[in-house]
Length: 380
Figure 1 (spheres, one colour):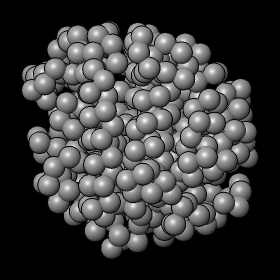
Figure 2 (spheres, one colour):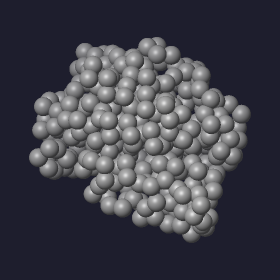
Figure 3 (cartoon, helix red, strand yellow):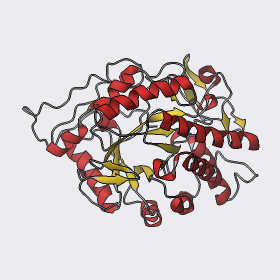
Figure 4 (cartoon, helix red, strand yellow):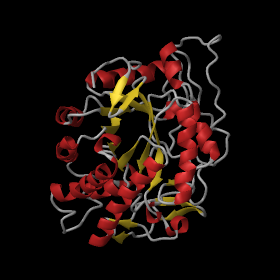
């Protein structure tokens, strides 16, 4: 890809040509059916945002035990594939392109939600309550994965990637971030294993590497991205050795020919960012830290700083939630819609999901101080 600091310049991503460098980040919104099947309302939501250069659809579980919260999407059954196909067709008709994020929750799960005891690299419970259909419940001790569990989960990710392609997605993003299963294998405080999947740095990297390689073998590396969140402590994670983990992971996977590496909460001033960029030969997506009230100028400046530091594409989460036409708003310097109520993030229904207005260009006024109370949604 030709590097550019212009957010609105076209870009290449594997076999795709993107009309701009703005990516809609994966954001869990709990609008699926109870069994994980996407709904027609979700097709409307994503089609409204099809002007993004790329949409990465929300975290979707590759098997039943990987479910995190109620009404999370899945991609391991025929109904899931059919539901997602309605979404991808709507986005394609609106001129958009989509990847699907594949996420296994690991210890971030509960029997009250999935009907199954969650699994994890080691029997270390989440140090906080977790939301279930019966409200917040204490986390349970996860079952330590056996070698057979590990192999079966790798295979589940590969099948989920094939299902995603059958559902019409251009590719998938393997989720190794934000305290979920793959991140739990990377982190010292959640991975106490003494077999080949723990202990040394190479052992802790192994599961993420094997999942990514299996997914790439199934659908082609040029249609696979990987998301990581270096140093992120969400869901009780304490990595231990962040500065070593991610450059080593980038080096280990750099020759695979992946579509991209996606850095969540990317800080261009952090040494690990520079080391990853220097060691990663392909497309790098940066997801900037925007703070609680990002207005138009804040979003543009943070995005352009990341591009100048070496990112090739910019992933934005909260700004896309309330602004289906975010690309045009940023292009014009127009104000952003506010996210009206954090409660509406996850309760289901159209309110706070598909009812945000698009910009009326006749009344749009550029703003250098537009500032929106964008309370943080659940980032996948």
